[in-house]
Image 1: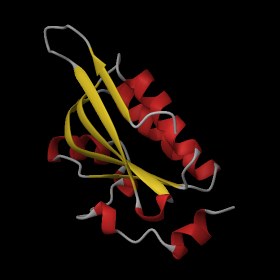
Image 2: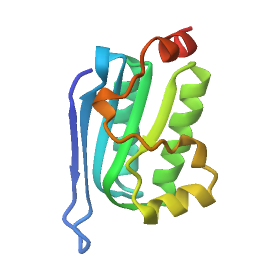
Image 3: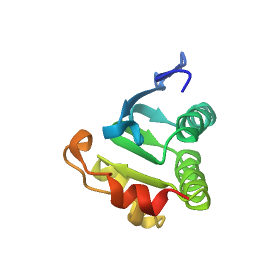
Length: 136
């Protein structure tokens, strides 16, 4: 993994920005990306590239959206791409910490299965049962 923080800032009326910080999960089997700000049409391409770089080295990738303020349809499309790529590569992809406003959008669009309610992500057991299931 080349870097562990992505920051995209633009000088716009909305102050649209995106910040993503990588946290390794137990045993470095996976990573959680803490996302904050706006996942909009302009930020999503860099976000997707960053996620793919992290996911190359991991069996589990989670997105923590508790500090995400806004998501566009392009951002939702990125989740779909990551989910499909994870399934193809026999990896686990999930979303947690979803604010109610964003949860409604994801549920309506059919992403309910990706949402996991995990209180303490660092202590969550992604141990042997995930490693066996998602390790080709």
